[in-house]
Image (cartoon, rainbow, N blue to C red; front, side, top):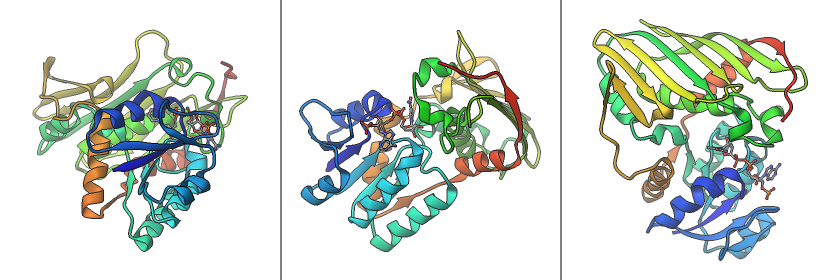
Length: 306
Ligand code: NAP
């Protein structure tokens, strides 16, 4: 299937281009980017022109930051293209609902991807937790923003989510592996004095049986921490390295899911959606972020400069 990749930046180069190149199912037929391109692939800097000239390309994968994404997604759907959205699927929940309605009207597939859900041990963790009584759940997501988002100003602008840009990855795993409904009950958002979005945050959740909390921090130098720890009546689970490793009661465990890699699994899922005419627009991770921003007590912290 021919596909166009839009927004040739960090994640397009790091993950999408290699995953597409390695797949027998996909052919990267065009890129659309104001500055970026991929060697050997027809490059457009005007999205509408690509949509007009390349009627043979039926699928568009959007790798832009969340704020500009809605406009591109809406144009692609209106032009009858199937659309794959990087996470988060939009800047607001309403935008995402609007896209879903448009996709249904136009009878095209729409996929809000959550790459962290495709990490190797996420399904093993979900299976291990099933049926157990959860007592405590602690999410710790601490990384160095200068290392992972060098120079990306959009993360500090309204709609850029700040530390929730990685934090929503943790929430995408949480909403996949914990069966019981949860909701945010309190949040603290630490916002640098010269920025619009938080550099750190703490959340508390309601869960029917467990005490559930989350700590996010973008100021972590040295070792990076992406951990979900769940204490249950049947033992303690640690999901480490963003879902890549699983430890149960201190022992490394779990079998990696097939089709190695998060992005190859996303593109395989998109193929399935196309084959079935499906829409996958799960907004649960984004709902928690929106609630944290609604409820969050805002604290001003030291200014941030690169
Ligand atoms: P990025 O490199 O800063 O931006 C991606 C591309 O989007 C840019 O190269 C730019 O291409 C285009 N773009 C930026 N602002 C635009 C605007 N206002 N209008 C039109 N195009 C614009 O960002 P990224 O790190 O790849 O992240 C993109 C998305 O992927 C985000 O939603 C992020 O959460 C997600 N993601 C990122 C990572 C990661 O490790 N960075 C991992 C997983 C998911 P041109 O200037 O050439 O048009």
